[in-house]
Amino acid sequence: MKIFDKYNLKNIELANRIAMAPMTRSRAVNPEGKAEDIMATYYGQRASAGLLITEGVFINEMAVGYINVPRIQTQEQTDSWKPVANEVHTKDGKIFMQIWHVGASSHPSILGGKLPLSPSGVNPNIKVYADGGFVDTVAPKEMSLEEIYSTIKDFGIAAKNAIDAGMDGVEIHAANGYLVNQFFQKNTNTRIDEYGGNIENRSRFLFDILDEIQKHIPIEKVGVRFSPIVDGFGVKYDDETDDLYRYITQKINKQYNVAYLHYNGIVDPSIKTPHEKVINIAKCMREDYNGTIIINTGLTKEVASEILDKGYADIFAFGVPFIANPTFVEKLEKDIPLTQPNPDYFYTGGAEGYITYE
Image 1 (cartoon, rainbow, N blue to C red):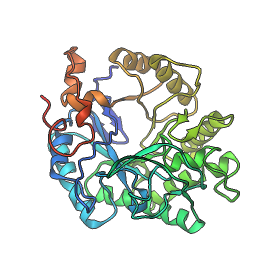
Image 2: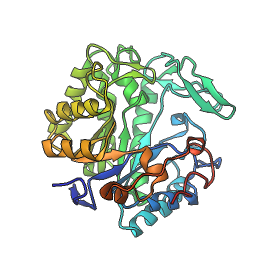
Image 3: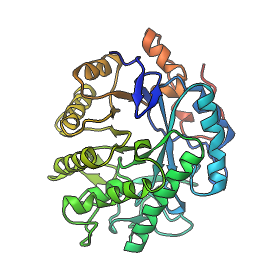
Image 4: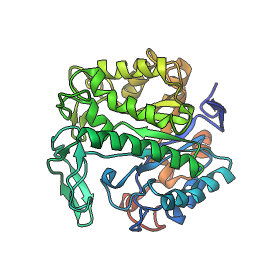
């Protein structure tokens, strides 16, 4: 069993056990929030990965936290993603769309003057990129129950739209301090209703999203991304973080036949090296989850192979190496030196540094 072997993901045949991790690239330079034609070329170039996971795609207007990032809300936006899925499938690849709401990690200048939404009115005190450059976040608006219910429904619509666009599945972005993650953590969720307080209540938002999505698409086409860390992105690791993620993982294992769980980050903040971090999280989560686990943090071919041999994870997601190496899988397998990406082009519009490598 090797990371380059085929893998069956809920009856989706993957060419190998390597995934391209979701990465924001800010190429949707149009006011409609549509995917651009150039994005079909970008994902098609990288379709030799067993699984492509798209950049985070916003579920509605209030989900937006970065400029030039696409949405999957309207029919026009849905149609704009069809060439992307078609190009990947033409290359015999598989692709999941990551669906996303940033919550408090936004700014009124990005949201038409409206305050960002969040579980509670807690300012994450981070910087976000707007039209004029980086700006400081502000105290967000605490979501009403009506706004929570509406957002849950929009996750369901986004999932349906993604499948209608030809995607093989969707990944819920529940990591990195964004909206779903904000509901998890005590420092960003001080609610006293059914969405706040104890672990069960703070995880309710995620499970309501899963329940809503499976009204529209098979749950087997849904993955979830977590970051069981975390001191950063406005959320803080606390004395209940480990128990919360174990509760979530165990409940999904028993009640939701999802495609996969995707973990990045660490469980124990005292563990410092990338190798130790990824081994630790894979080992901890495997104790509670019998399905497909994707790991993404500090990976090398050797680390991924070690984790696979131990049975801790099944698919291994690489991010930045794919930027400048569309044929990353082949290079990894044959130990071909990698091209180094130019960070100056990570988030700029246009072809340079996006589809111009190799």
